[in-house]
Length: 510
Ligand SMILES: Cc1cc2nc3c(=O)[nH]c(=O)nc-3n(C[C@H](O)[C@H](O)[C@H](O)COP(=O)(O)OP(=O)(O)OC[C@H]3O[C@@H](n4cnc5c(N)ncnc54)[C@H](O)[C@@H]3O)c2cc1C
Ligand SMILES: NC(=O)c1ccc[n+]([C@@H]2O[C@H](COP(=O)([O-])OP(=O)(O)OC[C@H]3O[C@@H](n4cnc5c(N)ncnc54)[C@H](OP(=O)(O)O)[C@@H]3O)[C@@H](O)[C@H]2O)c1
Image 1 (cartoon, rainbow, N blue to C red):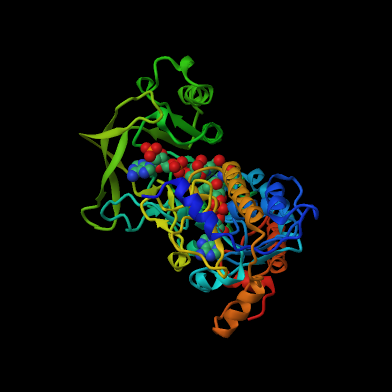
Image 2: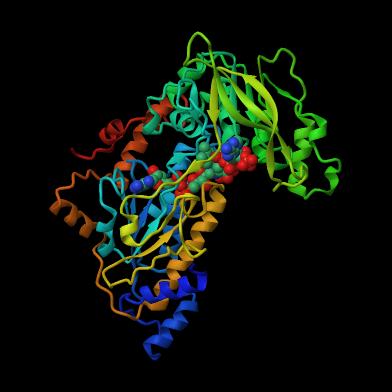
């Protein structure tokens, strides 16, 4: 087993091959100056050329900080889709436009002449990852979580069962799910398994009035499908209790305040006896849950939070084997009901919730990119994260030569698929600090000059790889068309849900 100290020593040993700097102070010997400049606010040495894989918050915030700290840093940001921003575009709920303001900051980063957006290039598939190594000083894995966790129930892939990732991606225009076409007309009840904020996004979308959603950037085809929906009640089901729920107060309040939607009160006995002694955020959440929402006369829809239920099996119609009829849950018992960290065990008692439609919302999942291991990155399959030193330096046991890039990770692929944009930013800044620190510490050793995207492109051409990169100006073309079509429909934008349509609008030639 390697400990962190070991890994650090190993890491700094392998990154001693950076380029010779221009020193901040010409009077100091290079090594001393290097040490001083490491702590100095102003650094005037050479700058690295960095590949960032992924254009979500982790990629942009890492790029922003390194570019700020080391003037002249070149960032080539690779993105598998022709459009940037990751989950800010394809995850964040359409009725949360204010959350998407971070895109302005990302636009400022992209406006730098040192920044290049290389969209429509899926690293590890369109372009072999190891090909990047000799063209960059550092590679940052910031590619998020492109899969989701499964319940492991038999029949989970049958019709009318959707992952929240697919459903959210579908209503937000993610090309992968353009053809999901969820049938929301199978019955009047839906079950969402999981009690995180994504589960509440799914429930809110199913229950919101269309005249409210119509004004958002939700896709037109989603509006059409939602307008046909027959779903009237949504159960949001958790295996633990209110004290362990993963959702946050703002998202709960939004659901409680929905027009024309009632909330089924949570049984009193599920709350801790003494709410006053709880830390303030949990206390406020419990108080709001306990209060619920006043019953709205003649409300046409409703929802409930169903606690202490763990899914065991799916039940099917006796006449149609693919027709979902319900989810059988095991009632659970908490070891310490008042502790947010409480463990839970299943009991023998069962509870059936009849439903025609099921959404699983139990978390996203990252995967390794093909070629990572060849570069020295180690993917932890169990946790779905890249192994690193705790800060974002990627662990490797190989002895590095001067023609290899250092490796870092940032965001959900580093920490796992939890955390809001603000925490992803903090995490990305930490990775950026590691990059800056390593660069400044070791810049006095010679290192081959790096060609960045130009070098990669030349190699790709030699290998006859059919790349069709989308650059920032091409994205701006897509952006303009989306906004113009949206304006005609009274919404901020109408997203393209198809890569070919995006490419057409981008102005990129065939
Ligand atoms: C449904 C949902 C709603 C959310 N709502 C909110 C909210 O309202 N407020 C909030 O603060 N936070 C919200 N979050 C959390 C927030 O979105 C995340 O914290 C953040 O997006 C994580 O950033 P990331 O850069 O690590 O990953 P991502 O945002 O997923 O970005 C990763 C990028 O990498 C790209 N990529 C993947 N593989 C490759 C490859 N092989 N080659 C090239 N590119 C690749 C992806 O296409 C993507 O663009 C939400 C999350 C979800 C799932
Ligand atoms: N508006 C916003 O700010 C917003 C919106 C959406 C998402 N986000 C953020 O994005 C991140 C991801 O959200 P998320 O909702 O996908 O994940 P999450 O917050 O981790 O919630 C996952 C939920 O799934 C449950 N779960 C996990 N495995 C299960 C299983 N096998 N059986 C039953 N239940 C299971 C968890 O219960 P246990 O706790 O018992 O494991 C938990 O309730 C979060 O940090 C979230 O806050 C923020």
